[in-house]
Amino acid sequence: MTSLSPAGGLYCHIPFCDRKCPYCGFYSIAGRRLMPDFLDAIKMEAMLYQKGVTLYHDFEQHQGFSDETPMGLRFAKGNENTQRRFSSETHTKPRSTKVNEDARWRFSIKNIKSFYGEKTWQFDTLYLGGGTPSLLNSAQIEDLLLHLKSCFPFTSDAEVTMEANPGDLSSKYAEALLRSGINRLNIGIQSFDPANLVLLCRRHTAEDAKDSIKMARAAGFSNIGIDLIYGLPGQTVESWMDDLNKAIDMATEHISCYQLTIEEGTVFGRRLKQGRLTPLPDEYRGYEFFVATSMRLEQAGYCHYEVSNFARDKSLRSRHNIKYWRHMPYLGLGPSAHSFAGMPFLMTPKSPSSPGSSGQSFIGGKRWWNYRSVKMYCNAIKDGKFPIEGGEDLTKDAVRLESLYFAFRTRHGLDMEIFREKFGQDLRKEPAGVLSSLEKQGRVDVDGERIRPTLEGMAVADAMAPLF
Ligand code: SF4
Image 1 (spheres, rainbow, N blue to C red):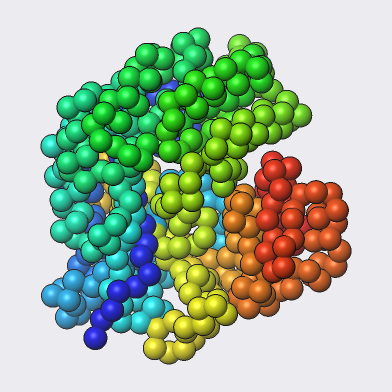
Image 2: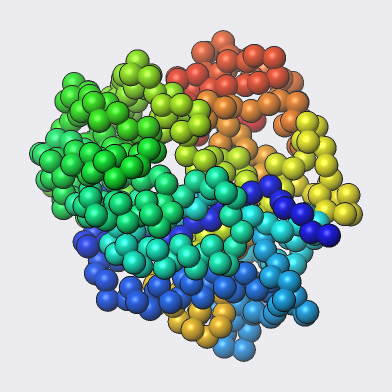
């Protein structure tokens, strides 16, 4: 008899933007010409996963994805009626660890299923990200959500988030989104300062930014998040605090504050190289921005629960993003989307159930990602193939290292007892003196079995993990 698994996250990448912002390193394309093909393709992709298939990929033998043996897709015998479902997760950000990428790599949904046993997977989060999902009209959103819900089981209390551009939101649109099942809006405000919006080449104004939040609220959204960017060329901590205060006045449930980084291949990257962009704040000034942001938002009642994320309440943290940071499974649909299936989260002394029926103690995972190009993505699906560009096996050690990276980025930190059970490493002793030294430097707090990064620790989170 099948039972429900722990819930995973479903991500859909909507890769269209009206135009490319000069600082953006995410995969998106300007214009909507390919949107109809894309919408057909993403719905097909959901159906491919729904049907229960065996994916086969072997980097050694089939590099180049020839016509004979491209990402092979074979329907698993006899399971088309069982509607086998599994859950994994996806995002489109760069992977922090690359493992076995050029080694023999095989991926089988059937195998993953065997890790977990005969369980039917369900999702408790859905995230429409981009790109600019709000370029889709409300009928397209509704159609997509209905389709996804017909393909996969969702829990009744699923968090359903959509990213929106302030300029796209009208009262009617916001009401329609709520009716279609979106219950959390994440609005890409970036700044309430008109000069910053011009610098970032955003197509919305500061008035649009405020109006969009008010309209979403009036439409009935009770869970609204906003994205802000700081550390802009020439920006001071004082002017950033003015901006942040305007955000606090809007009383949204969630605020993400990202420090601007200049990425190669972007317009800002080229301008910086050519000396046509005022350099960003240096590391020390960057730290001042980070600390001031945290202190101001904590003072205003927000909990700083991840390096860039703040929530008014524990229940208002992004449930979907937390899956990425805890190795929960996620399935990503759409160009450049990433997926992850693993099971280390099941292997804890507090939850000692062994995976599947075999009782094996596998710790690791599989991550795979789709073609970035919308055309390649759509063409693969038209040919009845999964649009997967590559994948990697995550070894136990890779999962160990990622766990440390994630733990030092979040207030939740990590439980040393669980860590020891999973990875056989006692962080108090191995490597000798590292934990106590970080504690003395004020970078972590140790409370019983739990290690939590301090604010200073979160600021240098990525430098701490490799020490272990
Ligand atoms: S709207 Fe967002 S995803 Fe699109 S180009 Fe601008 S920053 Fe990138």
